Image (cartoon, rainbow, N blue to C red; front, side, top):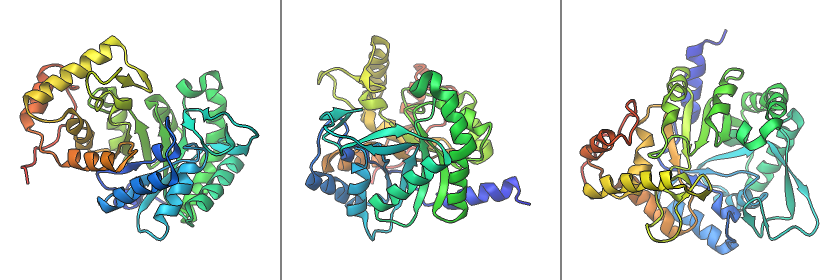
Length: 343
């Protein structure tokens, strides 16, 4: 009989190759702005040239566009890829130029489907677009009450009764290395752990320099279960990287309220006092937690790739973390990075 230790070791092997820094692929699916095929290829090529070897995408990103562009750019490359299930792309006529935040995307409409057949159909279509016969990580996308409201219990039942079984079968067949959820909501991860044996969560925006309530039970639970976290949205939709005075600060995909703006400015002031970019502290902070395996900021240009790589390598003095904690800007239980000397 398989033991808890066996499961933990299997997860460790499947996710052991995850690097500290990965590539968030929504932007090359035309999130908020159209990106040409040439420019999308340039971003992915820049990531490869910078040594990035993990790329996250999804059918939802441009309704197949991000996966297609990843497939073209990464064909034959030895990289890790994660994609997602939970939506079926259905053809539509005369689509609006912008839909669900994506501009000039494919003429397809995403329809939620967490059933066994829906997951299998979605996965097969993803493999075709990605030009691969397997993926390293498969994630059920956007489950959660904040996303689905009163429809959430039905979607969760469909996932647990069908989609989860499909994902397990794909993993057992060697077509997927690890399975989990890709979500913006911490609560649904806890709910899923009550019923399913998952390897990893791609959790966007919920464990960052700005927001650390995940330490109140959830991250310790993941650590005990051997479940890894891929940290998505490390800048909280831009709040921790946007330039002051350059327009409204964004948080959770919308203009931030006064409380968030004030907290960001306090974080920025402490970082400035230590001569460290706020963005560098934001990228490095979550990786100090033992459950965190990787951080994946969105990258829309070669310059953003270069910035992300530089920020992960920028020395951040230990006194900065101490001052953040003294200012009440870090959770008392938050692990902090060990300072690295400048090269």
